[in-house]
Image (cartoon, rainbow, N blue to C red; front, side, top):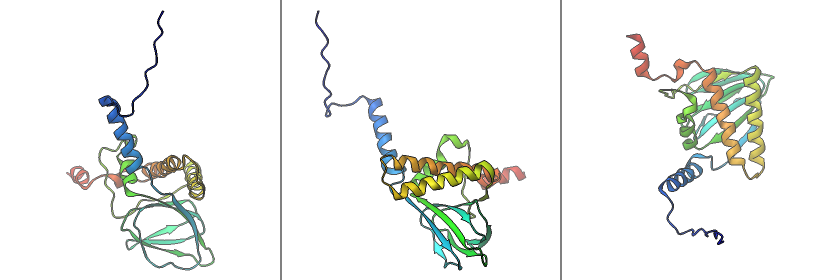
Length: 200
């Protein structure tokens, strides 16, 4: 009885269309969607900061202290477990309260990652726009716990070179976005056309 001999795989052999499509989608995801660098750090402010022009998609989490943030000319109160999402071109500064320095953790990612995140099907938003006013949420309970654990994970991965750090950081960022979409009023994400239809 003749046994089947395993066939070797030729890397130059054309792949099936389905395999090629999957491989192409995977390559695009890895090369263009996943964060290409890990940027996360903690800063402590005792005096007002100068204005900064944001260039990335940035999540800011207040770890301790009180104060205010001036973003695009608007004022927001800051206290522990305040989570803010800044987009590119947002202009901002921090004003710590007297005697209570602000400790703020920041995590940044490339904008293509953010576009993928808000377009993914799990958010279940038929239409979504991002107004010039950044989403700011004041967390407590489980949401605050998840946000702080996610930021701790990002800070850890930023200082280490683990094999799967890119994938882990993507998941941590998704946690932040999920919290914001859950905590912000749904009207915040509605387009202007939706508002005009509701008024009629």
